[in-house]
Length: 328
Image 1: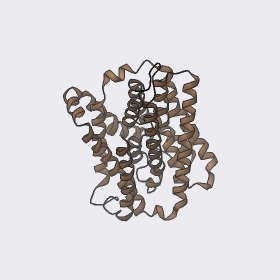
Image 2: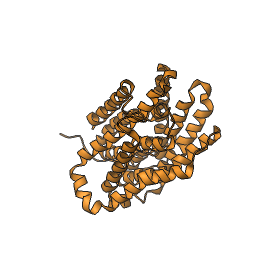
Image 3: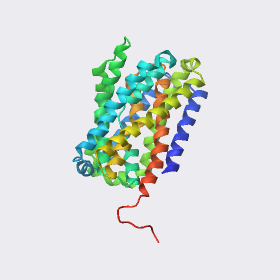
Image 4: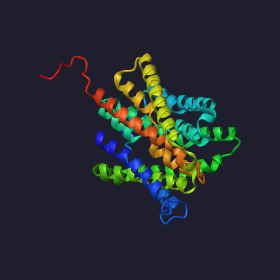
């Protein structure tokens, strides 16, 4: 698992570098026709997510409501409130587009595939992870645009909220539901080719990241950004991640959750979805030449969460159960 995640993080870095060197093909008007290609890719990814989701596993995780409230409260309340606090305190010290990117990160839903995979590796409550991750993705289609619209409106701009939510439903929710409805025919195929389909998933993310950064490079947005932009992004992303992780861990322990539920609370409550965030940004910030800067925080945050949570999953996965003795 560690090699897969490290390889994807490296691929993200190489993709950004490629966009910096060769921005023409992925820019608006380029031969790749980025907008149409990425929309088709997003629909394909969410169709496959739907075909891969077991309703039986989803139903099995529905009963742990205190845990669900902790996870969804962290994702859609704690994170956005921290984002608003950051907007208030950031001031002119952080460029406006980067501040918006940090808030966008805070408003995003949690991850699906990596949260479930890491929970399984850590021997946590997998059905609860499936339920929370799936619920977060569905809620994010409505709650993420609402939070972003609130911030944009406070800055004197407007966001066509109805059109944005409609676009997200067309390109995310509808393919997801169609995929899930076709699970009876495609479920076995998806299960057999899980690794290959995961490559498709990540390939689409890389494609969208490439076209987004191509637009930003071509429009000259990065000329006004220096190494300090990357340094600030690294520092704030790391601080935000570890703070929320400690908050969720403390709350889960205070509520006396079993370790299996603590694992779900920490993984699902502290992570943010790059897979959902990148296509959402394409809709929410369509036409914004600074979309590459806006996406930078979620890309960096994604790297932190994968590295730290993979280590935690291995650590928790090696724990001894009560009464279990050391081997040998």
